Amino acid sequence: MHIRIILLSFLIAMAACKTPAPVAGKPSMSLSGPAWGALWQQRAAEYKALCLQAYNIATERVEVMSHQQTLRPRAIVTDIDETVLDNSAFSARAALNSQPYSQQSWEEWTALAAADTIPGALSFFRYAAAKGFTIYYLTNRLEKERAATLQNLRKFGFPFADDEHLVMSSGNSNKEPRRGPIAQKFEIAMLVGDNLGDFAEAFYHQLPEARSTTVANLQAEFGHRFIILPNVMYGDWLSSLVPRGASPAEADSALKRAVRVY
Image (tube, rainbow, N blue to C red; front, side, top):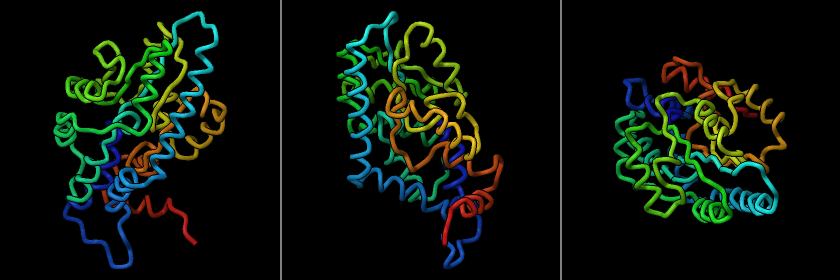
């Protein structure tokens, strides 16, 4: 979730800061983006179809692997936010109220344990667990959010929703150091996420061109070992377009320069 610190601070904070109102005819991408993305996630049947497609592919892969021999027990490592749990209500509220992201407001949301499930997630992870796969939930939520996160997962009956299989963040959004100990005990047969950093360290803090090149290099993994979910509200795809330390106005200008028009 620390990706939100980069994203929403850049994209929503403009309205909270005393910056001039957007000039007529020049809409602010940073103000409209998260709310528009949340609306799509909540209301578009296409979004649901994409999630179901991803989890259908994941189910087929688990079925195939369940008939293959392995020398080590298999695990699936999954992200939580926008992969297992739907936080679009939080993004929508912040954007519509022109509120910048803050860790406090995020923790107020997670403490409610009110996030819904991502379409297809619950049935897939139950199926994978029934086939003998251990599930690890590797999240960038902070340790102080552990109890509420477990409550939210358990409310829906997600398998392996316990302290042992919930891996929180100490403040570092790089997930590779936390994947390592899992890989020492298990064959990580599949990784599931909405952000490329959920799959490989090669994507961490990379610029858009490098991220695209790495996707091309790893293309055989997608739909095979890597299962990716859609998320247009926030993520490294967006923060990679904005220079670190940019002001809200500079961030909005960077996004406008990045978009193609005719």
